[in-house]
Image (cartoon, rainbow, N blue to C red; front, side, top):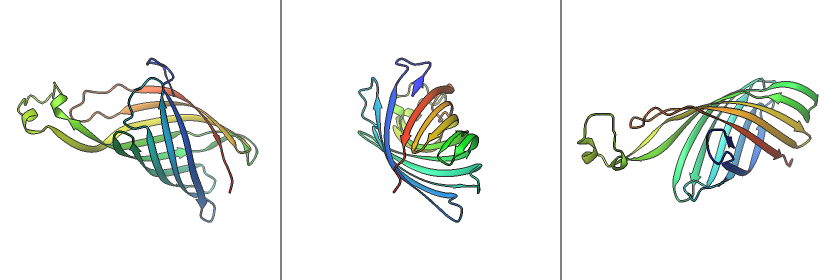
Amino acid sequence: MVYSEFEPKWDLTTASIGYSKNFGKHDNFNFDVGYSRYIFTESESRDFENSLEASFSLETKKSLIGASAGVTYFFGDEQGVQNNFDIYSTLNIIKIAKKHQVSFNPQVSFILGNESIDTSRLTDFQLGLPIVNLIINEFDTYALRNTQLSIPLNIEINDFEIELGYNFNFPNALIFERNLDNSSYLNLGISYIFSF
């Protein structure tokens, strides 16, 4: 991923492997499972360097519009769970054959997750109740963490797929967080699909 506002601009490389199966009368239902390894450019953190993912999706007959729901379990030195609910579309720009095409695939994702908040480290509750820090030292919360708009262009040539996309993040601040700034980033993905 390339972030325009951060140093280093190239921050994250992800290596993933997974299995995907279409089913149904028109192959418009799909189930995916996978594993991902996250490699950060300049990070000593090992909090969440691995994940296991599973998702289920359904699409219209010609894959014009689809929706999916997924769960991701992150692990490393820490553990966490994230759910995503996506609405997406597949708009073919150029289609030479079934495995030779260029498509535009916009997607809106709602990302929910759990987070542990250590209130003893917070200096400004914005509540005006200093006694709260003496009563509550830590709590867990599960909430909408981010809404993401993805605008990717996909190029498929046989079993290779190249994705170039631009993504906009609209984070949702928790009760003790200040308003979080929106962000955006560029992504590039290269995939190879093995048929069984």
